[in-house]
Length: 246
Image (cartoon, rainbow, N blue to C red; front, top):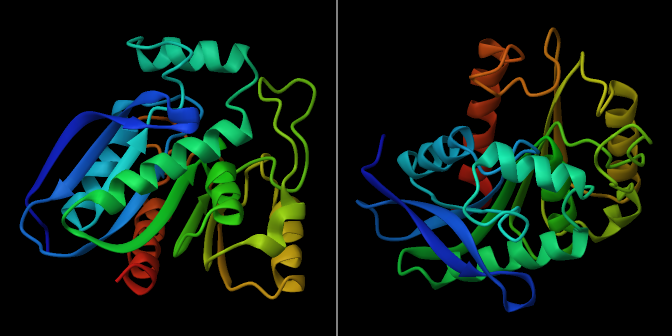
């Protein structure tokens, strides 16, 4: 069933009480629904990720994407803001967690919220989705090809991200991981390392690695897009959130 929806740019209270921009999409023909924090990829708070929020709303979820680069470049285009964020080495982990916590509080304040919240992130956002799952109380976490979970970012990377696999025992919810077999960040070996850490920690998880797909296989406007992998993965995402957020 496809739901009617509304979408708008709003302001939420993020880390440290900062007012930051966010994009909210909601179904308008439901009573109580689960909520999803959408964590954008390294290219930023862009139209592609806003469409992902609307897709969740069309499937019956409240979806909120905080603009993680708002402080660096308020009002700038997503490309310009992403360039500034890359030059700064990415978003500090503590600030990211605070912004997602603020997004969760806003989602829970909505009249239609059922109290269940999940997170999903792509690229750098995949790592960040895993991180907030370890530091905040969530009901379901989706990691779409998140790099630098089991290994630090290499020296040539614009991100100064550090490995966070040591936080695995604190993961608060089931995890769905979606990866490309041709990806280098994370590589299949790194995905296997995370799988082992989750197993050793006794966590509930489900990993899918797609042959012939590399990084950013969800991105419909990039050469990396792999329709068959993305279509199957979207089905897994909605099945997963259907179980964890209902």
